[in-house]
Image (cartoon, rainbow, N blue to C red; front, side, top):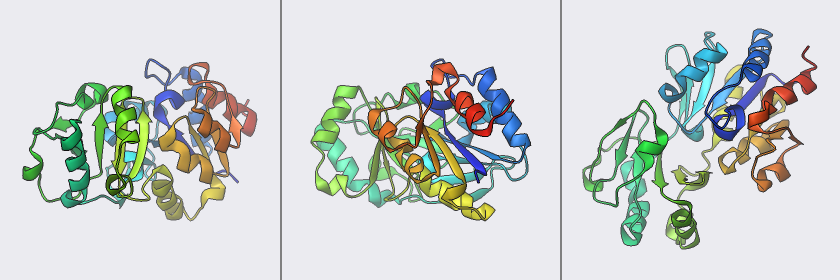
Length: 268
């Protein structure tokens, strides 16, 4: 039985102009009111998606959000941390050295703010993220010794293609690496992805992946699409995501989430 619906945001629940359609909103609210958990899953912090949480009415005492691509599971009402996994500063040394050698930018995120690494090439991440987060330019050697959620190389697609192609094993094998957007390459702790965070949340409810339906479109959604009992790819999803999904729905601009939910739950 499906008890939880996990939703990627960009190019999945959100239209191309970054909005939740009224049709999607209505169907998700209806199912949430029936007791099904609706969980937004994103690489961003919760403050950056608060308007979507409010729009969907996900403010019950036991509503949670998966943030930082699974690195942090946080309760919506009071930002209580149910689960968190990050890396210390030294874990990013191989990535910093690779970026420095190849003239790549680098941003490192803790769980509240972003550190653009100021002794490297300037990054476009801040303008791309366009979120309510503080950006604190810092030299890598001066980074605070604390827990970090992930690192990001934000650059034009051809630059990221080269970064992936030329990446040595000392970097590639040190992180869980996902291309979350054409211009964003993310580096997380090993094994951390949206499915990792969802596993912790499902366990909190006394459920497992047989109770999960997940919607996504991109590489950073692969884990949850593959592990969910019902894994739904958007029509606009990358082909590898469609191949591992149990179902494919219409596009994010054609109310694909609502279209599938209406069919599956026979919502009238």
